[in-house]
Image 1: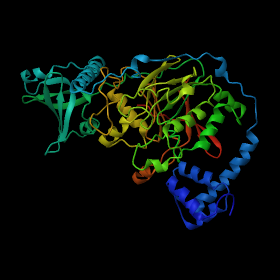
Image 2: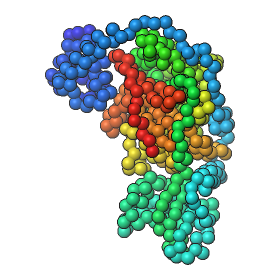
Image 3: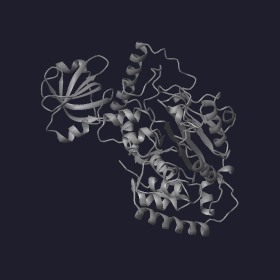
Image 4: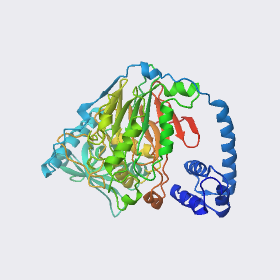
Length: 511
């Protein structure tokens, strides 16, 4: 045996944690390699499920070659960060942050006010953005049959009729109507898939009967079509999420490589030039594992109290260079309420970081302006309800789910699902501004896109595959660090495994 390996079961157990399958020969091959853990992690991150000896031999040979190349390329250089001598230009947009402002009593009237406010905001966007001339729903009965008509309403019900048509009940503040998509209208039926309860939509159609409309087109509040707003300097923003500090699946060693990277250690001069231009870092939720978040979680923790978890989180975060402005939002494992909007993490849990001028504990969702660009920062739990309601969305393409939320201009697209909400007197979930960049997490899978000039980034996670993810076949994207150049909106992805691997992301989705 080599190194610390004593039995084949050690290799097999580790492989099971990663969600990969080994046969007897590949297990034996790994037993004879001291670097077996890193090899397995890299193969899992590359999407391999069943690992044969052929796949292993090719990987081992590539790793040997990579090690030789890296030894030649990496030369120690003194690290002088350009961002250190540059004044940051940022503003936390407090008007959109619920921290310290929550005053909901949770009564029925609070929910009624919330939904009225939501309807007024989103219907106002529809009226301003589209070629719609909507009439109040109460006047629909006075319109002649077969006459063209425009309406705006909130979807209160959706169903499939006996004849295969898709039907919606729409409500405005005074009345209701039924909107019907005929089964033969295949293109409209496809569009109707993305309409879910509580959406505010516009409809062009034909009056039919007393309070019926045959739908000819759908409209969403959406973002305007525009080019990405750029800045004149090469300045970078980075993103990490879902660390789950305190979990036995937290990739602590790899995360320490990220910290070394941010401090310019063991990098080429070219790499140091780029990392030295990172001015902003968004840390997007589930910063710690938490306690009692799900059944039997206690057995999966190496730090079994929440204060200890945050102490470890602080220990790691304190190693980030002080010239980088760090914006930390909570997730559903953090020590805040689970219901959205979630206030920022209290200084009781992060006393050392709270005293630092470069750390900012913000809500989820929240907005931060950096270099004149508006950043929407949102942990992202509503994505789960959206994915379960819209058939063409999936956990492996979180960027597509975020595009749907941008189309709807609403981070609370559906009430009454798995994700709870607090009816604040102000709607923090409607996307009132037009974001230049969206940072989110939660789904443990990376995803990048550009939609109507807005850059969308989900960075994946720093926690290995959980038992629940194994059951549903979800393989997380781990240990990736995307950095966004604000000058040209190009993304460089740095992956931390055995070697630090960097690649430029090409061909972002344009829609």
